[in-house]
Amino acid sequence: MKANYINITIFGILFLFIFSCSEDKIGDNDTGTLTGIVVSAGSNEPLENARISTQPISTTIFTNAEGKFEIENIAVGEYSVEARLDGYLAAFEPANVTGTNDPNVILELEPSTADNKPPSTPQLISPSDNEVIESLEVTFQWKSQDPDNDPISYSLELRNITSEETLQFEDISDTTYTYSPLTLGASYVWQVTAKDEINEPVKSAVSSFSVISAPDDNRFLFVRNIDGNNVIFSSDMEGNEFQLTSENKNSYRPRRNVAANRIAYLQTNGEDVDIFTMARDGTDKQRVTNTIKPKGFDLGEINISWPPKSDMIYFPRFDNLYRINSNGQGLEEVYTTTDGSFISEVDVSENADIIALKTNNINGYDVSIFTIDFDGNVLDTILTGVDGATTGLNLSVTNQLVLYSYDVSGFESSNYRRLDSRMFVYDMVADTTTDISDQKPDGTNDLEPIFSPNEAEVIFTNTSNDGISQKDIYTVEVDPGQGGAERTLLYENAFMPDWE
Image (cartoon, rainbow, N blue to C red; front, side, top):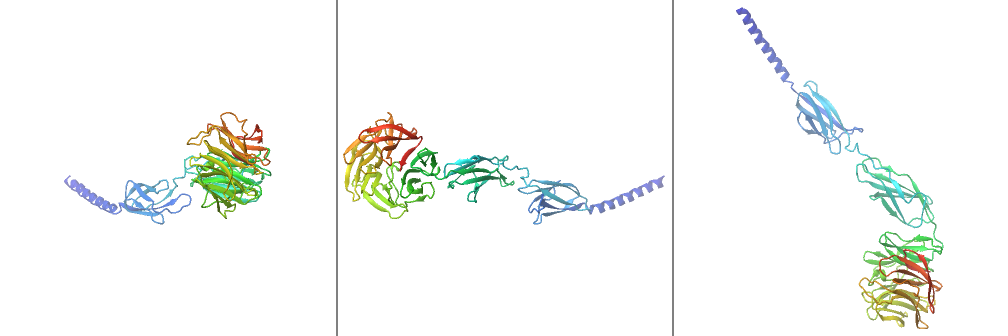
């Protein structure tokens, strides 16, 4: 029995020795090496500087330029390997480290925008398909949305079918775009592309429009206010209108020169105003003035004169009267007031050597209307020593009549409001003045009168004396000896007429 006990003891010791030797052998391989590569999903492009971590936690490392990584001396066991990189979604792969077989994992990272949706297909709003544009300017309008609220940029392709010219406008951030000048009589197609810099660009359908042909006989000019800017229009005898200047510019006081077949006008630039000219169809716009520009007590109350058959445009600048060639050359000082008063309005007849002037003080009052010759000698004093405002000054074709508007109420205010402006014709031969506003409705003003080409009518603006109501353009047949006759409405929501 004792011998058996001794044998069991010896066997146990041998077993412990053998087991101990076996544990020592495994302990030599209780770590391994984990390797792998990180690539972009789809392209398999290696991704550098991706952050590699494991769960359970081990060493955190980053991939090299080839997208590879290696974790040495990692404890044996099962791991979840994670790869992270800015701009990509995190990826996970399992790995089993045994100590005898080093695992190699491949982690494919999807871009973080993989679930991002493209913008909606742009819907073209204006101009509508097959619309006829009655202007040299067009404002394109469309709409599109991005489901992920990503910023959208647009490109607009505009193709002139008539000339086969294609224009491309890029990086538009708004859903409107204004373009000018269009070609008269041409047909166009246009298309908008929306891009969010993540997905493939999305193109709209193609839409078409055309532009009316050049007006043949637009003898009327006038101005409308559109979204805060004055815009010049022309019209024929049937009332067919055509927009000549951009809604994005403040343009006013059009004066057509028949001989030059061009139109002069004023256009503001900040606090300044320049004289421009353009062709009758609104093309070929050219700036005339440069360092010396029209100036006065109120830029909206000054005017210019371009005499028939002349290449000289006359304009006021404070107490001076200047003239300049329509090509911007040959600036000359013509006249300076003797009392320092400001010149606000001018009309010139070069063939008769007559200049009609309206002067006023810095507030627009203390008005004088008179004519001079080109040597500065006063010929006729038409209005002086009165209270109240005047507006509009025009010589007749015969150079015997002067047409103007004067507020007979004598009212004066800081905002230059007029209460009862009436039109008058002064006959320089007979030295008589005739009121031609006898049909004017009470509470309104007759403003900016111009003789018709045959002097049988006057075209003018009428509006409420509240200073804020709509302005409309009328004509009235006039006999300086008999006063005014019945009025005819020509254009609604319009002012500053010209008729040549």
